[in-house]
Image (tube, rainbow, N blue to C red; front, side):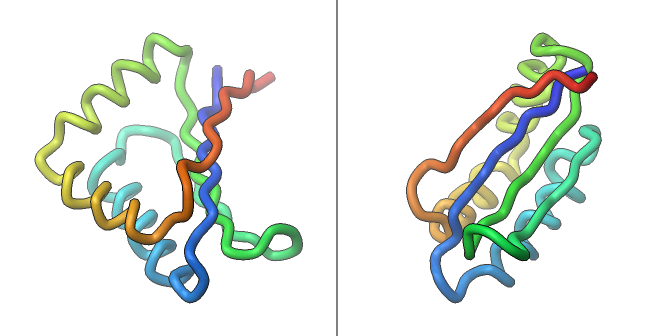
Length: 96
């Protein structure tokens, strides 16, 4: 198993909107992934982390291809990029 971890810095004052949008994406755009959303409590402010579990990188790539092919992806992603600063950090972790 692997965990894809996406870490985003959210623009100041946009945390609630970004969290709502992330939850909407988890529900409507990538519902097939085992997914978690984290918000900062102690540590970097204005941070949201989205994690998705996959069997392996092949499954992850297939899932990502399916997600970006959805009609809802473009408008969702356009809104998301308005709420974040920079590109974020993408990591792949082995789940032991």
